[in-house]
Amino acid sequence: MPLPFGLKLKRTRRYTVSSKSCLVTRIQLLNGEFVEFTLSVESTGQECLEAVAQRLELREITYFSLWYFNKQNQQRWIDLEKPLKKQLDKYGLEPTVYFGVVFYVSTVAQLQQEITRYQYYLQLKKDVLEGRIPCSIEQAIRLAGLAVQADFGDFDRYDSQEFLQKFVLFPIGWIQDERVLEEATQKVALLYQNYRGLPAPEAELLYMQEVEKMEGYGQESTPAKDSQGADILLGACLDGIFVKHKNGRPPLVFKWNEINNMTHNKSFFALELANKEESVQFQTEDMETSKYVCRMCLARHKFYKINNSMCLSGCFRPAAVVLTRPFMSPDNLYVNSQNGYYYHSQTSLDRSPLEYVGGSGRLRNGSTSSLTNPQHYMQPSPMSSNPSITGSDVVRTDYVPSQAGTSSLHFFRHCCPL
Image (cartoon, rainbow, N blue to C red; front, side, top):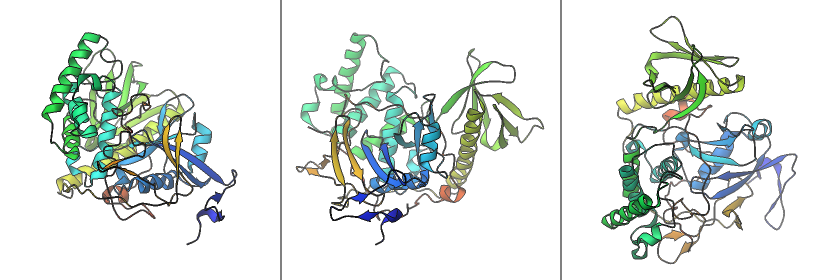
Protein backbone atom coordinates (compact mmCIF):
# COMPACT_ATOMS: atom_id res chain seq x y z
CA MET A 1 0.00 0.00 0.00
CA PRO A 2 1.58 3.34 -1.01
CA LEU A 3 2.21 5.80 1.79
CA PRO A 4 0.20 9.03 1.80
CA PHE A 5 1.81 12.22 0.47
CA GLY A 6 5.00 10.39 -0.53
CA LEU A 7 6.27 10.00 3.02
CA LYS A 8 8.97 7.46 3.81
CA LEU A 9 8.45 4.89 6.54
CA LYS A 10 11.49 3.93 8.58
CA ARG A 11 11.91 0.68 10.51
CA THR A 12 10.51 2.40 13.57
CA ARG A 13 7.15 2.56 11.72
CA ARG A 14 7.12 6.34 12.18
CA TYR A 15 6.83 8.71 9.29
CA THR A 16 9.60 11.18 8.52
CA VAL A 17 7.83 14.44 7.89
CA SER A 18 8.96 17.83 6.70
CA SER A 19 7.39 20.86 8.34
CA LYS A 20 7.25 22.53 4.93
CA SER A 21 5.19 19.80 3.31
CA CYS A 22 3.14 18.47 6.24
CA LEU A 23 0.79 19.80 8.86
CA VAL A 24 0.28 18.22 12.28
CA THR A 25 -3.29 19.06 13.20
CA ARG A 26 -4.51 18.86 16.81
CA ILE A 27 -8.25 18.35 17.12
CA GLN A 28 -10.45 18.37 20.18
CA LEU A 29 -13.39 15.98 20.03
CA LEU A 30 -16.73 16.49 21.73
CA ASN A 31 -15.74 14.26 24.65
CA GLY A 32 -12.68 16.39 25.47
CA GLU A 33 -10.20 13.97 23.93
CA PHE A 34 -7.42 15.34 21.72
CA VAL A 35 -6.30 13.61 18.54
CA GLU A 36 -3.54 14.57 16.14
CA PHE A 37 -3.27 13.88 12.43
CA THR A 38 -0.31 14.46 10.13
CA LEU A 39 -1.64 15.77 6.83
CA SER A 40 -0.28 17.48 3.76
CA VAL A 41 -0.19 21.27 3.85
CA GLU A 42 -2.55 21.12 0.88
CA SER A 43 -5.05 18.82 2.63
CA THR A 44 -8.52 20.28 2.70
CA GLY A 45 -10.79 20.61 5.67
CA GLN A 46 -12.84 17.76 4.22
CA GLU A 47 -9.84 15.41 4.34
CA CYS A 48 -9.23 16.31 7.97
CA LEU A 49 -12.90 15.80 8.79
CA GLU A 50 -12.83 12.39 7.14
CA ALA A 51 -9.81 11.45 9.23
CA VAL A 52 -11.73 12.34 12.38
CA ALA A 53 -14.79 10.47 11.17
CA GLN A 54 -12.67 7.40 10.55
CA ARG A 55 -11.19 7.62 14.05
CA LEU A 56 -14.70 7.70 15.50
CA GLU A 57 -15.98 5.14 13.00
CA LEU A 58 -18.62 7.71 12.12
CA ARG A 59 -20.41 7.27 8.81
CA GLU A 60 -23.03 10.02 8.97
CA ILE A 61 -20.52 12.86 8.77
CA THR A 62 -22.91 15.18 6.93
CA TYR A 63 -24.08 16.60 10.25
CA PHE A 64 -20.58 17.39 11.54
CA SER A 65 -17.72 19.71 10.74
CA LEU A 66 -14.63 21.41 12.18
CA TRP A 67 -14.26 24.89 13.62
CA TYR A 68 -11.58 27.17 15.04
CA PHE A 69 -11.14 30.47 16.88
CA ASN A 70 -10.24 33.36 14.60
CA LYS A 71 -7.89 36.17 15.59
CA GLN A 72 -10.82 38.07 17.13
CA ASN A 73 -11.52 35.03 19.33
CA GLN A 74 -14.71 34.32 17.39
CA GLN A 75 -15.73 30.80 16.44
CA ARG A 76 -15.69 30.01 12.73
CA TRP A 77 -16.49 26.85 10.80
CA ILE A 78 -13.79 25.55 8.51
CA ASP A 79 -14.40 25.85 4.76
CA LEU A 80 -14.09 22.16 3.96
CA GLU A 81 -13.27 22.73 0.31
CA LYS A 82 -10.15 24.80 1.02
CA PRO A 83 -6.75 23.82 2.47
CA LEU A 84 -6.93 23.68 6.24
CA LYS A 85 -3.46 25.12 6.85
CA LYS A 86 -4.11 28.26 4.79
CA GLN A 87 -7.27 29.00 6.73
CA LEU A 88 -5.60 28.56 10.10
CA ASP A 89 -2.54 30.58 9.08
CA LYS A 90 -4.65 33.46 7.78
CA TYR A 91 -7.49 33.56 10.27
CA GLY A 92 -6.73 31.24 13.19
CA LEU A 93 -5.93 32.40 16.69
CA GLU A 94 -4.38 29.03 17.54
CA PRO A 95 -3.61 25.83 15.63
CA THR A 96 -6.20 23.74 17.52
CA VAL A 97 -9.30 22.67 15.59
CA TYR A 98 -12.58 21.54 17.15
CA PHE A 99 -15.03 18.86 16.04
CA GLY A 100 -18.76 19.41 16.46
CA VAL A 101 -22.30 19.28 15.13
CA VAL A 102 -22.81 21.78 12.33
CA PHE A 103 -26.33 20.80 11.23
CA TYR A 104 -29.04 20.20 13.80
CA VAL A 105 -31.96 17.97 12.89
CA SER A 106 -35.58 18.62 13.74
CA THR A 107 -35.76 15.25 15.49
CA VAL A 108 -32.87 13.06 16.63
CA ALA A 109 -34.97 10.01 15.72
CA GLN A 110 -33.84 10.47 12.12
CA LEU A 111 -30.20 9.80 13.05
CA GLN A 112 -29.46 6.31 11.80
CA GLN A 113 -26.47 5.12 13.80
CA GLU A 114 -25.72 4.97 17.50
CA ILE A 115 -22.31 6.61 17.21
CA THR A 116 -24.02 9.54 15.45
CA ARG A 117 -26.57 9.83 18.23
CA TYR A 118 -23.82 9.62 20.83
CA GLN A 119 -21.88 12.49 19.24
CA TYR A 120 -25.11 14.47 19.04
CA TYR A 121 -25.71 13.79 22.72
CA LEU A 122 -22.25 15.09 23.61
CA GLN A 123 -22.86 18.25 21.57
CA LEU A 124 -26.27 18.94 23.09
CA LYS A 125 -24.99 18.38 26.61
CA LYS A 126 -22.18 20.79 25.84
CA ASP A 127 -24.66 23.34 24.47
CA VAL A 128 -26.72 23.12 27.66
CA LEU A 129 -23.80 23.26 30.09
CA GLU A 130 -22.26 26.22 28.29
CA GLY A 131 -25.53 28.14 28.38
CA ARG A 132 -26.32 28.35 24.68
CA ILE A 133 -29.61 26.52 25.25
CA PRO A 134 -31.31 28.20 28.22
CA CYS A 135 -33.35 26.03 30.56
CA SER A 136 -35.30 26.26 33.77
CA ILE A 137 -34.12 24.66 37.01
CA GLU A 138 -36.66 21.85 36.54
CA GLN A 139 -35.39 21.16 33.02
CA ALA A 140 -31.78 21.31 34.16
CA ILE A 141 -32.44 18.77 36.91
CA ARG A 142 -34.14 16.34 34.51
CA LEU A 143 -31.31 16.69 32.00
CA ALA A 144 -28.64 16.25 34.66
CA GLY A 145 -30.30 13.06 35.94
CA LEU A 146 -30.38 11.59 32.45
CA ALA A 147 -26.79 12.66 31.78
CA VAL A 148 -25.51 10.98 34.94
CA GLN A 149 -27.31 7.75 34.03
CA ALA A 150 -25.99 7.93 30.46
CA ASP A 151 -22.41 8.68 31.49
CA PHE A 152 -22.05 6.49 34.59
CA GLY A 153 -24.73 3.80 34.41
CA ASP A 154 -25.85 1.83 37.45
CA PHE A 155 -23.01 2.38 39.93
CA ASP A 156 -24.00 2.37 43.60
CA ARG A 157 -21.16 4.60 44.69
CA TYR A 158 -22.42 7.33 42.35
CA ASP A 159 -25.78 7.63 44.11
CA SER A 160 -24.66 10.08 46.75
CA GLN A 161 -25.02 13.80 46.51
CA GLU A 162 -21.39 14.18 47.62
CA PHE A 163 -20.20 12.38 44.50
CA LEU A 164 -22.35 14.49 42.18
CA GLN A 165 -21.05 17.71 43.70
CA LYS A 166 -17.67 16.99 42.09
CA PHE A 167 -19.04 17.31 38.56
CA VAL A 168 -20.57 19.88 36.28
CA LEU A 169 -24.29 19.15 36.34
CA PHE A 170 -25.70 22.57 35.52
CA PRO A 171 -24.70 25.45 33.22
CA ILE A 172 -21.47 27.06 34.41
CA GLY A 173 -22.10 30.11 36.58
CA TRP A 174 -25.84 29.61 36.25
CA ILE A 175 -26.69 28.91 39.91
CA GLN A 176 -24.91 31.35 42.20
CA ASP A 177 -26.79 30.51 45.40
CA GLU A 178 -25.04 27.60 47.17
CA ARG A 179 -28.24 26.55 48.91
CA VAL A 180 -30.16 26.38 45.63
CA LEU A 181 -27.27 24.45 44.06
CA GLU A 182 -27.24 21.94 46.91
CA GLU A 183 -31.00 21.39 46.69
CA ALA A 184 -30.83 20.95 42.91
CA THR A 185 -27.97 18.46 43.24
CA GLN A 186 -29.94 16.47 45.81
CA LYS A 187 -32.87 16.28 43.39
CA VAL A 188 -30.53 15.05 40.67
CA ALA A 189 -29.28 12.30 43.00
CA LEU A 190 -32.84 11.15 43.71
CA LEU A 191 -33.81 11.30 40.04
CA TYR A 192 -30.69 9.39 39.07
CA GLN A 193 -31.75 6.49 41.30
CA ASN A 194 -35.09 6.38 39.50
CA TYR A 195 -33.26 5.86 36.19
CA ARG A 196 -31.54 2.71 37.44
CA GLY A 197 -31.58 0.03 34.76
CA LEU A 198 -32.05 2.51 31.89
CA PRO A 199 -29.47 1.69 29.16
CA ALA A 200 -27.09 4.49 28.22
CA PRO A 201 -28.37 4.84 24.61
CA GLU A 202 -31.93 5.25 25.89
CA ALA A 203 -30.87 7.82 28.49
CA GLU A 204 -29.02 9.76 25.80
CA LEU A 205 -32.03 9.64 23.49
CA LEU A 206 -34.35 10.92 26.22
CA TYR A 207 -31.86 13.71 26.94
CA MET A 208 -31.77 14.76 23.29
CA GLN A 209 -35.53 14.56 22.85
CA GLU A 210 -35.89 16.91 25.81
CA VAL A 211 -33.33 19.38 24.43
CA GLU A 212 -34.64 19.42 20.86
CA LYS A 213 -37.89 20.97 22.16
CA MET A 214 -36.10 23.82 23.94
CA GLU A 215 -35.61 27.35 22.66
CA GLY A 216 -32.10 27.90 21.39
CA TYR A 217 -31.72 24.38 19.99
CA GLY A 218 -29.73 24.50 16.73
CA GLN A 219 -29.23 28.28 16.74
CA GLU A 220 -26.18 30.41 16.01
CA SER A 221 -26.18 34.19 15.86
CA THR A 222 -23.88 37.14 15.35
CA PRO A 223 -24.27 40.83 16.32
CA ALA A 224 -25.48 43.06 13.47
CA LYS A 225 -27.61 46.10 12.70
CA ASP A 226 -30.92 46.27 10.85
CA SER A 227 -31.83 48.77 8.12
CA GLN A 228 -32.70 51.38 10.78
CA GLY A 229 -29.34 50.96 12.50
CA ALA A 230 -30.76 49.17 15.55
CA ASP A 231 -28.60 46.54 17.25
CA ILE A 232 -29.81 43.01 16.59
CA LEU A 233 -28.72 39.39 16.76
CA LEU A 234 -28.80 37.84 13.30
CA GLY A 235 -28.68 34.09 12.99
CA ALA A 236 -29.91 30.82 11.56
CA CYS A 237 -32.11 28.17 13.14
CA LEU A 238 -34.04 25.12 12.02
CA ASP A 239 -36.89 27.24 10.65
CA GLY A 240 -34.92 29.94 8.83
CA ILE A 241 -33.06 33.21 9.41
CA PHE A 242 -34.02 34.95 12.64
CA VAL A 243 -33.62 38.51 13.86
CA LYS A 244 -33.65 39.22 17.60
CA HIS A 245 -33.90 42.84 18.72
CA LYS A 246 -32.28 43.82 21.97
CA ASN A 247 -35.19 46.06 22.95
CA GLY A 248 -37.45 43.11 23.73
CA ARG A 249 -39.41 43.05 20.48
CA PRO A 250 -40.59 39.57 19.36
CA PRO A 251 -38.07 37.76 17.15
CA LEU A 252 -38.59 37.95 13.40
CA VAL A 253 -38.11 34.74 11.40
CA PHE A 254 -37.70 34.50 7.63
CA LYS A 255 -38.69 30.91 6.83
CA TRP A 256 -36.42 28.90 4.55
CA ASN A 257 -39.16 28.48 1.94
CA GLU A 258 -39.65 32.27 1.89
CA ILE A 259 -36.02 32.92 0.95
CA ASN A 260 -34.97 32.83 -2.70
CA ASN A 261 -31.33 33.77 -2.22
CA MET A 262 -28.78 35.34 0.11
CA THR A 263 -25.96 37.68 -0.89
CA HIS A 264 -23.23 39.78 0.68
CA ASN A 265 -21.60 43.03 -0.39
CA LYS A 266 -18.84 44.58 1.70
CA SER A 267 -20.16 44.47 5.28
CA PHE A 268 -23.79 43.98 4.23
CA PHE A 269 -25.76 40.72 4.18
CA ALA A 270 -29.04 40.62 2.26
CA LEU A 271 -32.00 38.27 1.99
CA GLU A 272 -33.91 38.04 -1.29
CA LEU A 273 -37.45 37.05 -0.37
CA ALA A 274 -39.88 35.20 -2.62
CA ASN A 275 -42.86 37.48 -1.95
CA LYS A 276 -41.05 40.83 -2.05
CA GLU A 277 -39.24 42.68 -4.82
CA GLU A 278 -36.87 44.41 -2.42
CA SER A 279 -34.30 42.55 -0.37
CA VAL A 280 -33.92 42.76 3.43
CA GLN A 281 -30.47 44.04 4.35
CA PHE A 282 -28.36 43.86 7.50
CA GLN A 283 -24.96 45.29 8.35
CA THR A 284 -22.36 43.11 10.04
CA GLU A 285 -19.11 44.00 11.76
CA ASP A 286 -16.97 43.88 8.62
CA MET A 287 -16.66 42.33 5.17
CA GLU A 288 -15.23 39.04 6.45
CA THR A 289 -18.17 38.62 8.83
CA SER A 290 -20.78 39.28 6.15
CA LYS A 291 -19.04 36.82 3.84
CA TYR A 292 -18.98 34.19 6.57
CA VAL A 293 -22.62 34.76 7.59
CA CYS A 294 -23.73 34.49 3.96
CA ARG A 295 -21.73 31.30 3.40
CA MET A 296 -23.12 29.78 6.59
CA CYS A 297 -26.73 30.71 5.87
CA LEU A 298 -26.58 29.49 2.26
CA ALA A 299 -25.29 26.12 3.40
CA ARG A 300 -27.89 25.83 6.15
CA HIS A 301 -30.60 26.88 3.70
CA LYS A 302 -29.54 24.08 1.37
CA PHE A 303 -29.31 21.51 4.13
CA TYR A 304 -32.66 22.18 5.75
CA LYS A 305 -34.56 22.32 2.47
CA ILE A 306 -33.17 18.93 1.44
CA ASN A 307 -33.48 17.53 4.95
CA ASN A 308 -37.11 18.63 5.17
CA SER A 309 -38.00 17.10 1.82
CA MET A 310 -36.40 13.81 2.84
CA CYS A 311 -38.28 13.78 6.13
CA LEU A 312 -41.56 14.38 4.31
CA SER A 313 -40.84 11.56 1.88
CA GLY A 314 -40.08 9.17 4.75
CA CYS A 315 -36.46 8.57 3.74
CA PHE A 316 -35.26 8.70 7.34
CA ARG A 317 -35.99 5.65 9.45
CA PRO A 318 -34.80 5.24 13.05
CA ALA A 319 -32.14 2.56 13.26
CA ALA A 320 -31.65 -0.04 15.96
CA VAL A 321 -28.79 0.40 18.39
CA VAL A 322 -25.87 -1.96 17.80
CA LEU A 323 -23.12 -2.50 20.36
CA THR A 324 -20.01 -4.44 19.49
CA ARG A 325 -16.27 -4.42 20.09
CA PRO A 326 -14.41 -1.89 17.94
CA PHE A 327 -11.62 -2.63 15.50
CA MET A 328 -8.18 -2.43 17.10
CA SER A 329 -4.97 -1.19 15.52
CA PRO A 330 -1.44 -1.09 16.99
CA ASP A 331 -0.09 1.66 14.75
CA ASN A 332 -0.89 4.76 16.81
CA LEU A 333 0.80 6.62 19.61
CA TYR A 334 -1.12 6.84 22.88
CA VAL A 335 -0.04 9.99 24.67
CA ASN A 336 -0.76 11.25 28.17
CA SER A 337 -0.28 15.00 28.45
CA GLN A 338 -1.03 17.50 31.19
CA ASN A 339 -4.14 18.48 29.22
CA GLY A 340 -5.47 14.94 29.20
CA TYR A 341 -5.13 11.88 27.01
CA TYR A 342 -4.95 12.10 23.25
CA TYR A 343 -3.89 10.01 20.31
CA HIS A 344 -1.18 10.98 17.86
CA SER A 345 -1.86 9.53 14.46
CA GLN A 346 0.93 9.56 11.89
CA THR A 347 -1.58 9.36 9.05
CA SER A 348 -5.26 9.92 8.58
CA LEU A 349 -5.76 6.26 7.80
CA ASP A 350 -4.99 4.44 11.03
CA ARG A 351 -7.09 3.68 14.11
CA SER A 352 -6.94 4.43 17.78
CA PRO A 353 -5.72 1.79 20.25
CA LEU A 354 -8.58 1.39 22.71
CA GLU A 355 -8.01 -0.56 25.89
CA TYR A 356 -10.88 -2.19 27.71
CA VAL A 357 -10.77 -1.88 31.48
CA GLY A 358 -11.85 -5.01 33.27
CA GLY A 359 -15.24 -6.35 32.28
CA SER A 360 -17.17 -3.11 32.64
CA GLY A 361 -17.06 -2.23 28.96
CA ARG A 362 -15.43 1.10 29.73
CA LEU A 363 -12.47 2.26 27.72
CA ARG A 364 -9.32 3.88 29.01
CA ASN A 365 -8.85 6.32 26.19
CA GLY A 366 -9.45 9.73 27.72
CA SER A 367 -12.95 9.87 26.25
CA THR A 368 -14.39 11.77 29.18
CA SER A 369 -17.45 13.92 29.27
CA SER A 370 -17.91 17.10 31.25
CA LEU A 371 -19.51 14.98 33.96
CA THR A 372 -16.58 12.59 34.21
CA ASN A 373 -13.76 15.13 34.05
CA PRO A 374 -14.54 18.28 36.03
CA GLN A 375 -10.99 19.64 35.81
CA HIS A 376 -10.91 19.72 32.03
CA TYR A 377 -13.84 21.65 30.63
CA MET A 378 -14.11 22.14 26.89
CA GLN A 379 -14.26 25.50 25.20
CA PRO A 380 -17.66 26.44 23.76
CA SER A 381 -18.46 25.51 20.19
CA PRO A 382 -20.81 27.37 17.85
CA MET A 383 -23.95 26.14 16.18
CA SER A 384 -24.09 26.92 12.51
CA SER A 385 -23.97 25.41 9.08
CA ASN A 386 -21.27 23.68 7.12
CA PRO A 387 -20.10 26.33 4.64
CA SER A 388 -19.04 23.88 1.98
CA ILE A 389 -21.54 21.06 2.13
CA THR A 390 -22.82 19.80 -1.19
CA GLY A 391 -26.27 18.61 -2.07
CA SER A 392 -25.08 15.10 -2.80
CA ASP A 393 -23.52 14.82 0.65
CA VAL A 394 -26.71 16.02 2.31
CA VAL A 395 -28.79 13.33 0.65
CA ARG A 396 -26.36 10.57 1.55
CA THR A 397 -27.03 10.09 5.25
CA ASP A 398 -24.95 6.92 5.16
CA TYR A 399 -22.00 8.72 3.61
CA VAL A 400 -18.80 6.71 4.06
CA PRO A 401 -15.55 8.71 4.34
CA SER A 402 -12.78 7.67 2.02
CA GLN A 403 -10.57 4.96 3.55
CA ALA A 404 -12.95 4.68 6.49
CA GLY A 405 -13.75 1.53 8.40
CA THR A 406 -16.74 -0.61 7.63
CA SER A 407 -18.49 -0.43 10.96
CA SER A 408 -20.11 2.39 12.90
CA LEU A 409 -19.67 1.47 16.50
CA HIS A 410 -20.47 3.20 19.73
CA PHE A 411 -17.42 2.47 21.84
CA PHE A 412 -16.93 5.66 23.82
CA ARG A 413 -19.65 4.97 26.37
CA HIS A 414 -18.55 4.82 30.01
CA CYS A 415 -15.11 6.38 29.84
CA CYS A 416 -14.28 7.78 33.26
CA PRO A 417 -10.62 7.26 34.25
CA LEU A 418 -10.50 5.90 37.77
